[in-house]
Length: 396
Image 1 (spheres, rainbow, N blue to C red):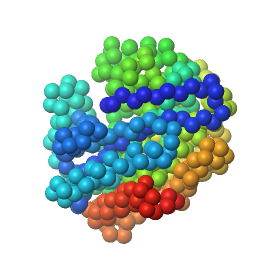
Image 2: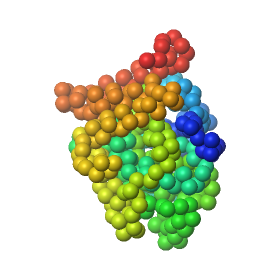
Image 3: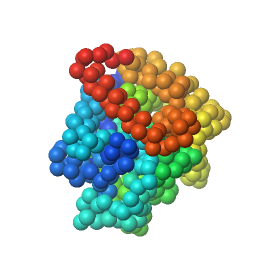
Image 4: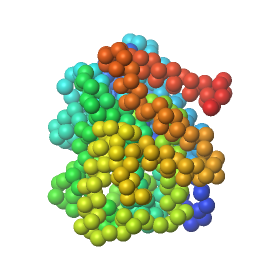
């Protein structure tokens, strides 16, 4: 991972734009959808790309910025360069989705054979970790606000999974899940509490390392976590890890804008939900409840019926998101990011990527044909985005 420097002072808050950055994981391979181990070759050619344990994962990290137009460029431009490189190299391309859709070689392609942590991951978790995702970081340096946000945002992680789900196929099969990635991905440790403050987080982390339930400070694999360059003591951001890879950059940024508006609302309200004002036993139960909610959405996506914690009712995930959109729309207008937020409505109307994948699959009954079509659409989206950046077509 590259170090990301976030600096933000909330003491002068009035919907001050947040610094944000993305860790973008994705697949590359053949135009027919076969994922290939290419991260070593890509890393040799592009210094901005880094390597995950298996070479079938590619990753790059955007620079932190308050600007959505800059973030748009930061997401798109590395992919355009990578596409050109892959095209010249045996006519290869980028592949959408967050799990390998076609049957794949179960051999591990170690990116760093001598890396003890990488070896531990692949020996322990096998192919369940060879996934792609969007990790979304928001700069928060005030520890009191960081842990408040960490806890309250955790209650909304199922909504973000529903918006981003893109992994309905795995190993040549229809999985029955919107996000097979999140269903299969090993959440580690198995129980991560709601942290009251920074000291509690430091103490808990050190205990996990001592008990070897975590291999190192990076081995905290939950839907959302505190992050920084010297964990657990030095923190400067919140990292949201639940989202599947979203191939349409405008929709990816819509999810980022959705989260930012939620954060701004929580900061201005300066209230902690009564759900979180509970004793330790109740909070421990809440951890289990939220993991169950994430699993429901991993299965059924926007159609999942889940707990709407704001109203203490059960509701359809898409309806909860639609209601929240109306609540945060004024914030987006004040931040001048409504254009970036609006594709949320497109997702609610037309479905997430898994919904789109399955819609075509039901017509052709072929995973290879379906993936091939969306590989082509992914490329068209990226090149259209590049045209927007260059100003040859307008951003809409």
